[in-house]
Length: 284
Image (cartoon, rainbow, N blue to C red; front, side, top):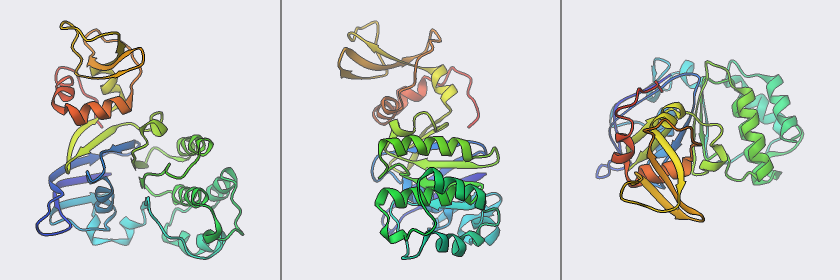
């Protein structure tokens, strides 16, 4: 679906955000792209979408270079940004103007999603609340049936019931030939949805594994105290003990804590990744 080959990028000549970045994304996955502010998450989505161009290397989507903006390619990519401006038109007018750019646009799905999100075709976009605008963009994006959906902080602005609704419609809307990349800080909002997990830091991919591989290599436990014979790869002190990440030597079945994993990778990426060295890896 997506191949990024030795890609270098910077917004200025003196600044380099990505240096020889390599990344492959396969169809049928909902990738979680995690990283700190300024790590390059949004920029990476823009590179894939062909909105900004690399200095060196290539971003290839379904066999086409993103930077060439070939209609056959961009008609199969839908990018939902975190920050957006919607015109002062009715929902129905926006759909009639923009749906033709996506040859597989599903009007029945759009109607279903508008109903799910309690939106009406006659409503004017500029009069919607921030959360309603976000719901509309999500509904439109899912209805494009684009093979590649790029979402930047999609749950920002949604209330708790809407976040649950978002997870449900995503799971119900996607097909096996589609891929989704979700850039987010809201790890807990999307923990039950994303797989595999990609973590980017300082312009580099420092972690990329499926949930199966993570649960096989790592154990997430709360331990009462830190002992010499029980040294976690990473831990955080909390109520009731220390939330810890340990090598899953005994093949324990523990619930993955993505927020703890993210903090662990950012703090001790070498230690976390070393735990995968002796485990068989699943393709992501």
